[in-house]
Amino acid sequence: MPSRSSPVYASAASPAYESYSTPSSSSSEKIIYGGTSSYTPPRKVWVDPKNLANYGDASQIQGNVSPYVKQLILNTFIAYGAGDEHCFGHSVAKAVKFVDISAHESNEKQGRMEATTVAEILVSKSMLNGAGMLHGGCLAFLIDNCCSTPLVALGLIKNINGVGVTQSMNIMFHSPAPVGSCLRIISTSIAMGSRIMSARCEVINKKTGSVVASAYLNKMQPTTSKL
Image (cartoon, rainbow, N blue to C red; front, top):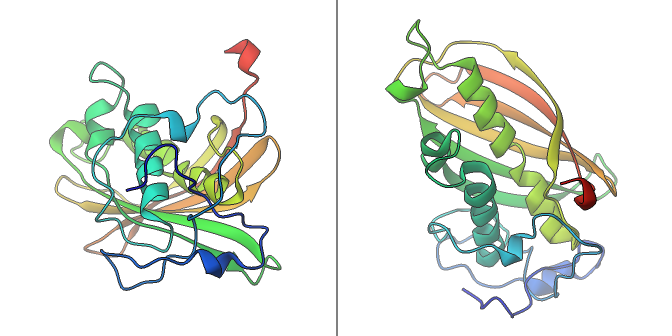
């Protein structure tokens, strides 16, 4: 993995982004995003992924972004979403495993970039409500944090900061998830403006294929003077 001082990101505005391709040791898929451009946040940001300590091992995460970008996303998820052992939902967030982080140019959006992350988690007893099913509040916590990650990824690719605070979240609950269910959380960026960002998410029961929940998430860059 590159050092902290090495250049990391590829600019999405560059028509020659495929020149940043490098071989992947964990997958035969070509790495096309995140390679050689230095990252300089355009203004003071409240969370800068490149300044966070490393958490966990991102080497097994599939997808076409660079290993370093995958590590930065994992770092942000753990530091910001899980926090330390005294933070709300810490054990739940630590149980999340990211399996794929990818990006592509969307034909429907006239070549605009989209990023997608896929995470998995096993429903444990501590995540249940009194009826023995996954608690809606726990599911909202998972969606809030996982659905934020494609925005972080897109920000890294576009050389801007994609870490924000949640402004609104609209969740539709479709089916229950009992203990032992493996949930697959698929999150995709929708749009990223100078201050407002949005993403969508589907939570799927991996064994049955049923949709447990779907959601839309809006985030914004906070004013640092008010934090």
